[in-house]
Length: 354
Image 1: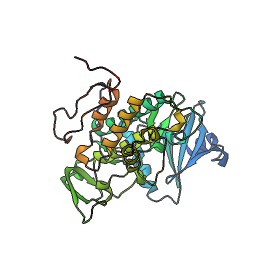
Image 2: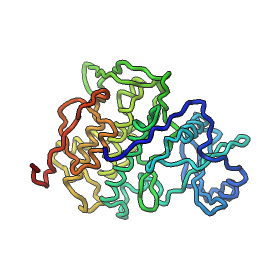
Image 3: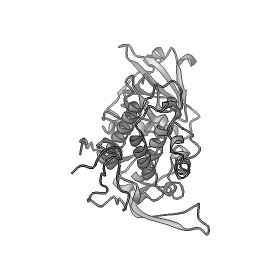
Image 4: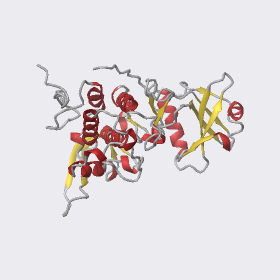
């Protein structure tokens, strides 16, 4: 492996001691009493404010809305994930502190100078060149792989999308927003068959797949939800892999429509022989075509309708960090099989090596 995983261990009854408790009075001063002028964005959790702490550090303050559905549960989950030590990874957004006073619930994170990935995709400014896009893909993959295979118990993020990839001033990516995460506590795990209908077949045929899963309500951006999870509520690590595949396609295409998946559109364009339409036109041709094609290929495999054909995230990292992104898609990549799941043929632009 190119990188090493830490293996923090935690229980669901652990107390929040990783982030420090920050007084509400201090946060009011930091955000100018939660001034509307300091709002960075709004979401299902509530509003996010720009703030400056007494030491001079700039922070993003997430303030739970009183009307947020499941907001308190998300607040507690973010603290539990942070307290576990799971987010102590270079590509996972760290929780700096939290506040729980009266009816107020707030989470404090470092302020990201370049906002999130979604805010840059599709723009004509050219700030997100091909090298940055590759770095973002690799960093996000490392962070997600750490949640899946570097933590005990493992964590399923459940909301991997471009809005939750935060970027610092150097465009280093941080996977954030753990409010929907599911910590795979042993007592919640089920190993069994996941069965769901193929919506494109008539009469209906069913896909079947065996894996370890947790039952959960279906959450996340619609374009990032795998059908095996959508139809059954059985969430596996391969559900995250599907979402990551869609993220890869967003990085290449520059498209961020949260209502529909990019998989069908990309396949249709490629099948029609119009490869040039797949890559974000805002790159203006300044990208490596071989790398782009292999990144799209990896995104499509991660988003395969069959979870058995989706790689594990550690394998995705290896492919992204390897000298080539090419691989043979000839067999299933089972979660319990320790044999190699892919091989690396030479890049089309390079001669084969002996």
